[in-house]
Length: 364
Ligand SMILES: [Zn+2]
Image (cartoon, rainbow, N blue to C red; front, side):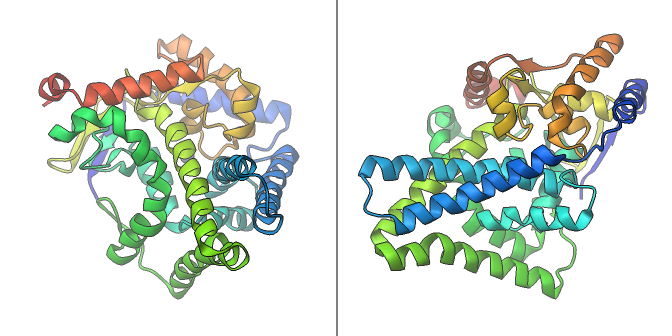
């Protein structure tokens, strides 16, 4: 695994931030994990997914436009479960009880991917080494996408801002049927080794894949015919891919985000304290939008999430105020987009820059 180190200078920002956030929870006598509202939301989202599945499979015929709309909503609810239930649980932030976190973490397997692989990819690599080329698998999408100025440039990437939405749409299918298998057979995530697999890991992996095909394709196919089932499956999975990719990319691959490079030697010394580097490589978007804050599981508060990944997203609006205050005191910038569209525009703009010859040469 590459060696990435952070500067020990300017640590006071992180120390004071931790103190202030701990004080907040102590004074309010709150747990840092999820609360009853989060449990209600989790059951609402999981219940809605099964209810929508039952309607789509057993209540046909419905009008074509109703089916298409419901399938897109179904895919979006799969994404909501990923954001709200799976993400908090896999970070250990959903509940104080680790067994509850483990159980709800399997909501990722309900969507078709192996949560054990994702915990290494996301919790360890992405969170510790955000936007570090050579380690952070989230920005490693060659040959079609160039997601960092440090990556080698290929001519086809000139058009990446145009075709990336297609790749985003198939990203979950690619994940379920290719990337998970690559991790399983190579026992690696990007450049990092996974722990040796036990019997339970093999059972979980193959059980997840069989369940996915059975629940989303075979049962609907037996009731509705396989042509209908496949079309429905693709509409739902493409919707899921677009929603998940866009929401995750708005945090780190935008204009002004910091990057580091460990590709060549596998070693990089980042000349910033870890917490300050997180502030430089991460952006919030529309923190005042109540619906997005509820539905995206705090992924519009990625700055706070990266600084406090073990704190449940239900607390991020309160923590954000503390982060902004402490950041102002230490002269550290708190990055955020006020609107969803300004964040989307910046992501498309950044992908366009990264696909441009000039940007490639300037950064080579
Ligand atoms: Zn996370």
